[in-house]
Structure formats: C-alpha cells, structure tokens
Image (cartoon, rainbow, N blue to C red; front, side, top):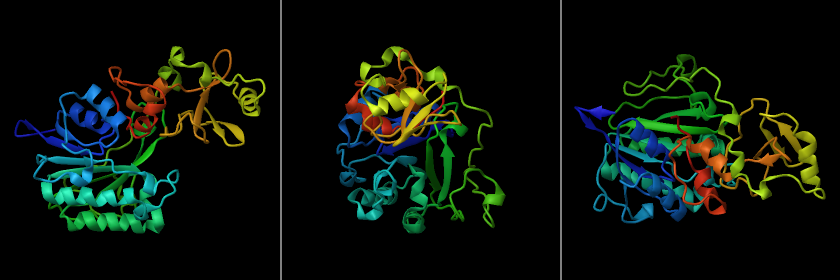
Amino acid sequence: MVANGTPYTVGSLFAGVGGICQAFKDASCDVVWANEVDENSRRTYLANHPEVRFTSSHDVQDITKENTDPVDILTAGFPCQPFSQAGRAKGFDDPRGHLFYDVVRLMRELSPRAYLLENVKTLATHNNGESFSVIAAEIEKAGYSFIPFILRACEYTDIPQGRERIFIVGFRGEETFHYGAPVRINDLKDLVGAPKSSSFTIPPPLGKDPRPVTDFLEPETAEPSDFYGDQNSKIHLRVRDAVKKPGIVYQYRRWFVRENKSNVCPTLTANMGLGGHNIPIVLAEPFPRRLSPKECWILQCIQPHFQVPFLHLASLPARGRANPINN
C-alpha cells in the first residue's frame, strides 16, 4: 500500500500484540507508532515490532495531536468487553466503552486519510443496535464514511479458528456508505439500495477449507496440567469418555463435551484455560488435553517468527486480543 512510491503511514490505538500492525506491514505500510495500555501486550509487541515507537502515554485519553505524529491510516481495536457477551455487554455504561470517543477525537485531531476499527461482532447488535448507531453517527460527524463488515477467520485465512470479528473502515470526505446491517461480502443482495464504496472493496472469502488443526499442534509444549488425567474428577472422566477421534477439536460446554463438527478451533479468549465453556480439547497420549498456550498463540498469529516473551497465565489477555493473520 503505497502512494506515489511512498508507503502509507499507520498509527495503531489499542494495538495489543500487533496482529493488525503486522498485516499492514505485510502490505508494505510503515507503522509509525502504536499505543497499548497492557504491559504484557506491549512487551510482546516490542519483541516483534522493535522499530515501532510507542506513544509517550499508554493511556489513549492522554494522546493528542501535540504529542503524536499524524498518519495516513489510523487503526483501533478499541475495548470489546463493553459490547461482548463474555464481558457482560454494558456498552457505553462501561467506562471502557467511552474510550471509543477518544478514537473519534483523534480522527478529528490527526485527520488520517482512512481508518480501520475492529471489535466483537456483537458490537452491531448490542442494545438492539443503538450502540452501533451511535458509533456510526459519531464517525460520520467526524467526516468519514462508515463501512462495517464481519469476517470469520477460517473463511478468510487458512487458520482453523472460528473467530468472528466486525471490521469498520472509512475514508475522509467520502460519501456515507449506507448499510442495512454489517455485511459479510460485497454482494448487492446484502446491500439493498446501497452503492459499493468507491475506495474500498469488502474482501471475498477464500473459498477453501482452512488447514487442519493438527498442523498447528506442538505436543511438546503441553504441560501436565493441560491433560485430563485425574481419575477422581468427574470433568476429567467426562472428557476422556467423549474425546475419541484424532484430529478433531472438542469443546467442554459446561455440562457436556461436544465434538466440533466444523473441526475449527472455537474463538480463543483472554480467559482460555482458566475455565468456561470455550476450551478447545484434542485427543492426545496418554489422555485428552486442552491446547497449550503456545498452540493458542500459533492459532492466533500464524507467524513462525512471532515471539512471545512469556507463555503462561500472564499472556492470556494479550492472546485473547490478538488477530489471526495469514502468512
């Protein structure tokens, strides 16, 4: 992505461990600066993007045009917990929900040519769509078009993860892109009465199956605590009784174990491995086991050179906020 031979510059708010930034770098953009409040995420980001400068303040509310360079493209994976089912979905009643307004403020102050936002897909339906309407109105008032669409990782990459996220892109001074709902593909039957954007095309699915989960397993990284081998645990016995097929992903769903018929890993979350109903389990020796922290990172980042300074509990929040990208 270049203009007149010069790479587009990118600034990233709520950058996490840098998945979105890596995608822009792969597209020949120049990621100039990043912002992230979580210390462990920053450590991981810097291990993989040492050339990128972090903003002087880790708090997005302290970032202004006086202390931050303007960029061509502004990205923001603003906090999803206020709009997520797993995060109690308090929306703008959650203090983190108000951080969205800092994104819009910086769009006005820095005046990028374009922006990219990322969040959970339930952002579109939270509070019967009222939150989404507020977001659209604020962005349009800032002078940008509003193009929302939902992508599922296993349909747009070769990564076998069912992670669905809403992406919103827009361009400064472009006519508003009218929509009925977030769309999956650039298909006019899904966009009744809506013209396609003159500056952006929603990418089509790859149209092929992702790689098998077994390609992403590294059994040597599993810890004893990852195995369901406790003879006195009802949960462990239930898992061992259900998990019988090699190469298949299973899920523990509170009271039962379910074979994932699509054979993709469920959405990896920040509390993966700490309980809940979204734990991916595979058949192993001598007992079935959940995915190791390293395997979860591989399923998120899919970069052979990706470095994680720590792989256990401290990395869980960072991993849950990562974005899968293709090689």
